[in-house]
Length: 503
Image (cartoon, rainbow, N blue to C red; front, side, top):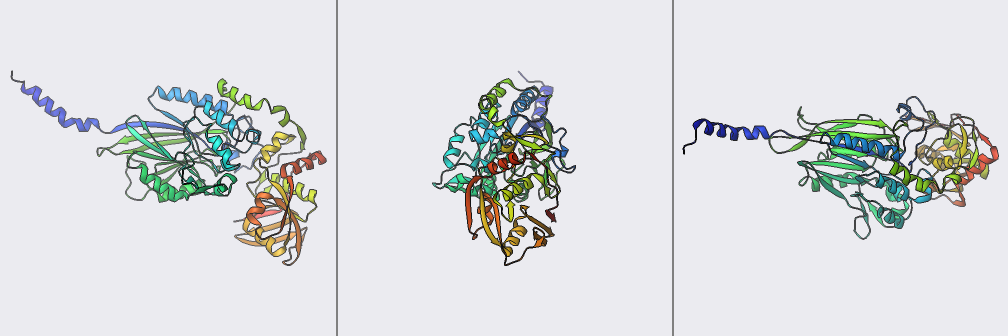
């Protein structure tokens, strides 16, 4: 039987149109992300902050965060987006530990248990996961019920510490994801026991080359800090997205690092960088939209990045709240112990760091030294006006650093002030555009050959005082500061211009 001519023509036309009808293909993915949560499983509040600071830009600063609220929000977003056909990943960019009593008591176990219950999809390691022994880190890794990715941490045996990368199908496309930890982790106890931390950029280049033949889109989960992430994005064009941590950067709308070469209106021509500040006070949300062009290549056609405040309007997920309570209830009364009172918030005002000044003054007075030095980053939280509890002090100083005493000549002291720019007690100094223009001890210019007695913490001593004779007192810094506050009863923040840095 002869086929009608019209039917033959229509069939031929359909064959011609098929390539046009097939393209462009589209897909989407929403990535919800956290970083640097540092043991903050419960809601928390910030003291007041400078108007220009990241904290001041947050919509609310009282009673925010909490992983049970975060889990409830994630569950709601997963449901809403699944109805639109959009898959959702929940990922963390490292430093889940060290910052609250949960970390002090449970060494990360409580954090992982809560994150398991919140249904995370991926994590990478942060440097503070290396704070304890290598055995403790390996034990912690066995608790995760989802992949922990870290491509640049390798044991001395040559065996990767964790899985380096993964590839997952998202509808019609394949997405490759790998993890990175900052090279700073090499100086932490677990790494010193036999873990090599490779260069972040070199590792990223290797991972991009390895994943690109097998994946349409490549994502890095990076605990390397915003500045290093920007360098990675500029050096490695094969990475589409970097979800960051370590620098505690608040990047509300994301950052795009352009790639070289011609721009295309239908593509995002660069690497997208996102980061969600710290402590889980906000949840990062990155919506990615993908197109497949006529050549069969997938690319990101558009994206939207934002930060969602986790406030008391969000109800807690009961299952996650129960996990948190299981760890908090046995220790709550002990961490509620009254230590003293603060007459006002201990916060930063420019270069005046009241929380550091408190620690430095307490140690100098206790050990009756001429000076005291504290590295920046060693005090992890500010103190709010009112009652000070043991929990507040652990949040302020979650580390187990001991107090170190030493003697130092004026010449070396000025070198340390200029190079390290520490918080101080007994000293006033000013550094202007890289040059030390003022340096005094108790109002007198520092003399090069004079010997000064000093104190600091064990971390800073190991980092900055090589070649200087030191004595470890064996007394933990946090205990010394708590005893000082107990003696005083009430402490007042000092804003006295003792440290001024003009860049």
